[in-house]
Image (cartoon, rainbow, N blue to C red; front, side, top):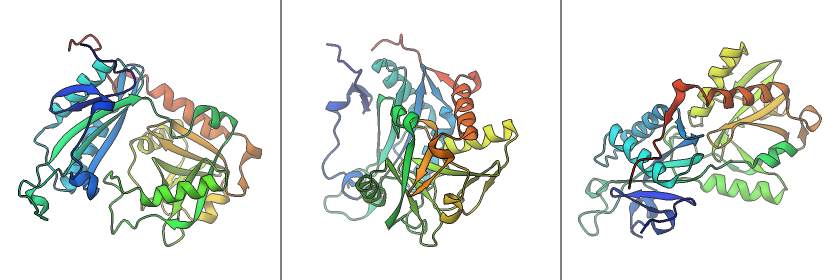
Length: 304
């Protein structure tokens, strides 16, 4: 019996199944301790975009957390290809995950006693902010009550599910009628938001924070595009005052590319119209997703 995987698929222990049927034990440390890492790679028009970049970061994250699911890069890559090919999704948000698992010795509190495991899942492409909202003018709220978890406590360059700060920030943003949230660090500098990096543009130069942030692949792509277009860029501390005084603000994410922001708190940029540099960067981003050197095509004819 062939399952309908168009709403999402999962890879579990070598099998591809509907995402609604994918399960992990309730006492898995990935669930009860957030002892887990993951990464996501977009599939755009039938091909992974910059797959090697995301895959390398995933393996770097696992190494940082002493996680080893017993699979090498080639095996993970093959698993994701197989899963997406079976789903039939040509535009997809694809997650690769490694969890600490459960202790092989009942009651052990030693993470070395756990059996690490890999799983993956994919769903139709996810936009961190819906395109129709971006067209109308996306907004972001700088949280007044929640600060980013210090990088000395949780390394933001290792993708993780420690979203307590983001989740509380999103509630605050929604309560104030804003679409998403940007968190500051305890020094009052901009960090990032749920699923995206932050950029400001001042006098034609990009500024993006250097601390307390994920080294996003989309962020890297934006910086490479800026260099290609002859636009200056600086990776350094970005104060909240600088952000509010910027000419343009945008977000970068594998879930949407370059996302122009027209309002942050009470500050309105460009009379509420998407900025020209942000728009140019976004157009170029989507052009780059078509370049063969960044594409890893999926064979959708692979049999079950």
